[in-house]
Image (cartoon, rainbow, N blue to C red; front, side):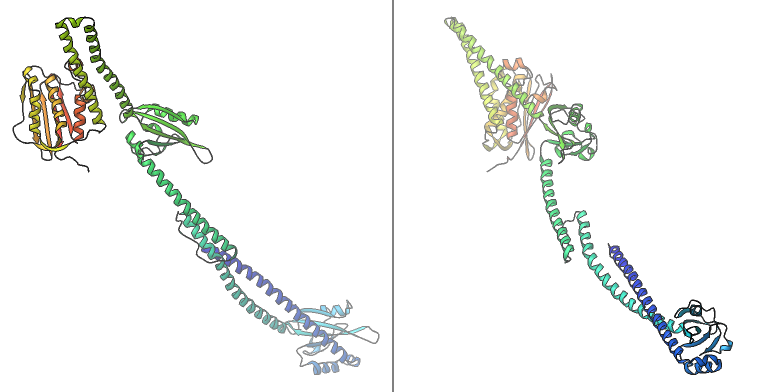
Length: 593
């Protein structure tokens, strides 16, 4: 920007120099010409005086004429010469006429004798004196009006040159002073004009660099003030808009970064432009490894890529479900919509993914639960109806048959009541509607109470039971819920262990935790079934468990009760060898309120 004021100053100084030089030259030439004209008029005046002062008799006596001319005009700066019509010098105020050459061909003399002019004037070098002079000639007439001689007056151009040189020097000094002062004023004006422009340019450059806090601080007037005010207004407007844009970006970024749905932006070249953290988690790839890649890299799903390609080609919104298998199997609800700019031009597509795997699994579980509940309820209800109808049809008069049927009806009613109770219990537990009554208890004593409850079944199947060593294992828990856990696991161990088998129960204090273990030598669980044994109504041996009166909800209840105590349950099992359930409880429960 500094070059700008230098260019303005240089141009102004050059223009000023040319104007002053031209003006000075014109004035000098005018003065020079005026001075020459004045000298010429003075020479004519002197020639006229000589013509009048020289009488006609003097022309006939050359020596006397020379004497008079020398006497009258010898001390002048002006040289006086009298020449006859043949060009002979009759008299001269400075030189000897006899030694002077013929002047007939001199321009000023020819103008008198040949051209018959009133006067003649010429500038040329004097052959006698050896330097340039100005000559003016006047005719001298006889009594008949004929030109008989010429009076020439001359002056050295040295004198004129001195005057002209002095004139040029004075003009040069005057013009130099004018140039100096005008240049200083011009440079100051240029700086005065360019400084606000430089300041405005500086502010504009800071705006380009996204620094919107700068303002034009120089006070100006006129159009520059309007420009400065406009720049400051622009900076304020940009700062306000950028703050608003930044705030909106922060909001959008916060929404994108914290939303559970995966979002991906794809451009018209089928390349990924943006992904949010939820998308990273869904597809198992970081954003830095996705940006710029083709959209097939996201999820590595042909079905998803087909939908994105279709939306890019047709420019339409698409809503479908897609199965992906990388990095793990998922069911995704996919919504794809065109991305357009403010002019309505398509710039790509936005893909929003909702992971509905758990929703679909829960829907499936709900469907299976309804079906299982219906099936489980239908069996005892059918039995009750069937045996009741049989009794009503006359079987009740046969005391032995009636007693047998009534016992079956009683057992089925008990089973139905137990099933309904378990369904209500697991519903309450899942909804966290069953508060725990926490107290410090001894697990060994609770285990003994539960074993006493099932002692008859143990004896009936001749099972060997190993109890934990006598000693206290104390921790915080709900006694009734803990008994439910232990009874369910012990009952399952008894149910699935063949007669003569072994069951081992253990409880141990592990510092901050309490470990409860129940191990049996029963039929075991296949590896493929282990992940599902805690599902509602899931049975490894459906026929046997139903015949034994099981509801299929025992282990589901156990899992929920363990988790309500902030514990963990682990299963190890092998078909034909047996099963081992390990539960880890924290000694202290988190109390709220």
